[in-house]
Length: 285
Image (cartoon, rainbow, N blue to C red; front, side):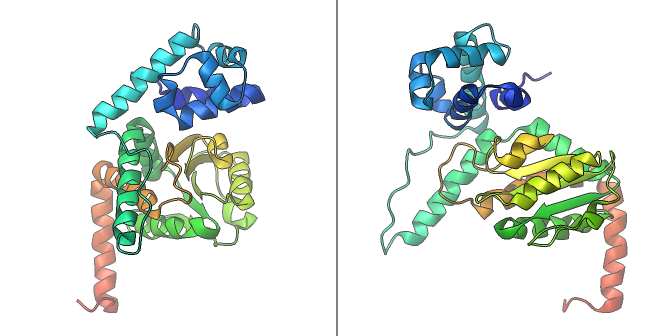
């Protein structure tokens, strides 16, 4: 079995950490490249906590000491870097001018997608794929600016399976989630500025027994902390606002997995859809 990543270990233990330990843990998650080089004292200074707090964090996460935790962090970072086969990301993007503004946007999106490739956890992706296939019903929540990605997933997933529902951009009703149970999955999109409705949907869905899958920008976003599965898009990038390109790319990865594992059922459903499209003369070509 593949060893758990530092992010997974931190997430599993996050609720039991002290406030100081949480600050150090978040710093490690957001700045893994720095973390592999810093001493406990240096890390504590960068995270705004004491050296003792950093050492206690290592014990709280199940390591024998700080050096043991740092070695695990180093291994995890190297595996991601080697697996992606990428050059080191630039420390900062060049300031765009009038003639380069469009190319700077493309460079930024390229950096975001490279980061997504490095941080993606295949195990968590396949768990999500299985929930998309096996759940009796799926409810998708996205509020405010997160609604666009939620709608994309809703439209695409309905081509592949039945019993898929979508929230409105402004919220959800309790009637929407009344029939959720332990065999259901709720997908919640949550990006800054985080909406209160996302947290409420996660709590209500878990009370119904459903599995909550968060698609967010970092493991320790409000919804990310609660979800059974948290998929992130820009974990180590300070991009100011989230990139819709990275969100849709992550969704396309998931949907490719769904097609791979459920191709027979999807094929039958799409044959029925094509007949309906033809009967209704829906498309011009």
